[in-house]
Image (tube, rainbow over the protein chains, first blue to last red):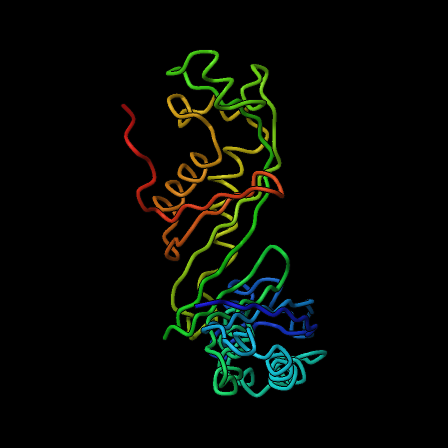
Length: 136
Length: 142
């Protein structure tokens, strides 16, 4: 089994707010991230796939295919967007880094047929990242 | 949905690698420059990885305010700008980054209740790093 990781970057804005909470609860739980006008990050995405090395091509996965799927399914939908308002998953879910990693996994997983998705890592900043391995 | 969340923190500390169980020559042979009797220092980067279900209400594994507050009061205040050799946990352990990993893991494991601790990873320099996940940390000496 060989693991291959491809990185990509996207920039987006978001804010954290749960309508089930009072204004005070939202402010207390989410702090600065609760500002309804939003704020932004430069996100770094790492997608790791795994598989056997194909003896003919020497590839785990065709990198161009992986790059195309990541661009189409993730970057086109998220880059330079206001996540809460423009990305369907986040009309009902809070766009935390945790939920972003889960959403990206759910977008990529059915589209990657050549290799198996192993990990989605999303850096919100260089000092904060979330890993999702598809565990329910 | 279970996710892993990692946060990085930085502190600076000095240490000297020296074991009382070895002769001066053995210490020099084992620890090299790190055995310099006056000590030396590093900017350590600590990665704390916790895991748990993503809460439906908050979208979080744990609130970063809680994790930051714990690490600041229990780890950074303890180690930042200190001489590690003078701390109680290194009275009988050499303050290698391996042992520092185990010490920090034990503090977080014992005191942080808001999420499951997966791993402590420490970068001593850009060129070396150490990880501890709570398994078979030390062999018994002798």
